[in-house]
Length: 247
Image (cartoon, rainbow, N blue to C red; front, side):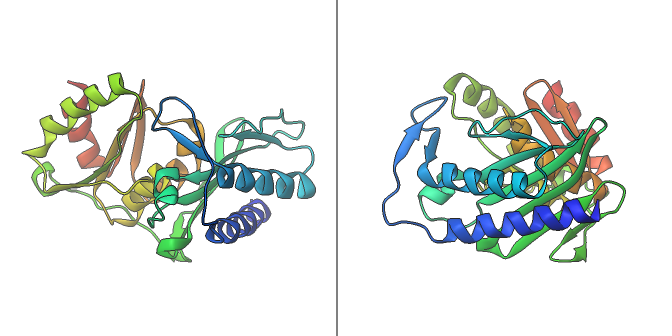
């Protein structure tokens, strides 16, 4: 596991360095809607990550946001998001990240979320704790709803956004405040770090969640998935948020 972690960190840092050499012009394609975008740098980052993985571990499987899928022959599969927070990246805003996880038949064993623009490298090994830049992490717990700083994000599909508006309105008068950072992986890692108290969002994919979920769990948070809805928080607040959002 240590070797897998070191390899994932090395690859994430190389991808981060590539992405920080941001071209002055980005070519844009769309995915699920006109505002759900992918750039040539998403694809370049995924290409680098895949090549580095296969160079070191040619029998491992891969699941990638931009389509770099291949079955595993080794029992290990890498789950990669080459840029989590592409809209932030497009607008040259900080907070986007590179997310790399490794899973076996029992779930994620290694998670790395690298956000170079905020100088944060989040890491975890299953059963080995969670860290930011080498310092151990612990989520905030217990936190009451009326003292909770909550992170969330919004989907690119209008019908799902309408559900998110209802969730937002249900909580806004009962919490400390909301934060909208732009990278789901970083938001979940911020739960682990105690930067925010809780997080929820609809429509996350495996590559958004795999690395950050392990990091949050290793920091003591509960991460649960209810259909399209993901909730992450310390145990006390998680129970309250689940009651509010699933009611």
